[in-house]
Length: 88
Image 1 (cartoon, rainbow, N blue to C red):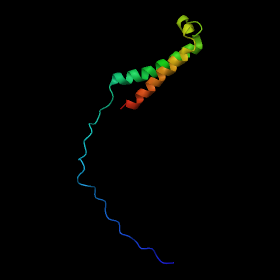
Image 2 (image 1 turned 90 degrees about the vertical axis):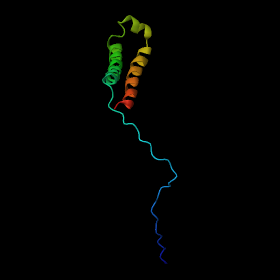
Image 3 (image 1 turned 120 degrees about the vertical axis):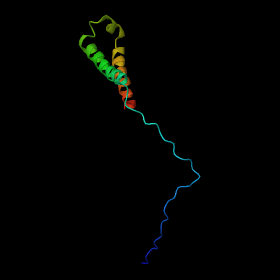
Image 4 (image 1 turned 90 degrees about the horizontal axis):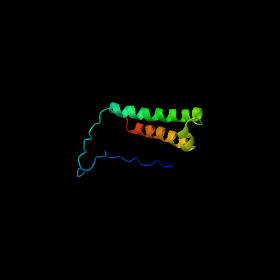
């Protein structure tokens, strides 16, 4: 079987007519208030669900909300978790 020919590869050179790269502003660490709100929402959602399970039938406004309590608790935790995406 005949041997295949080996081709030389030319070095890649980027085109010169492209724009120059833009420097991105480096963002510093998150504000302390942002962290407090983020962790506070996660903990508040957890506490809301725990209170709903333990004493939800003894608290008048939680009785009125019914199953919406689960939505409130999980929504608070999800908002806190979504805030972690912007945490630096």
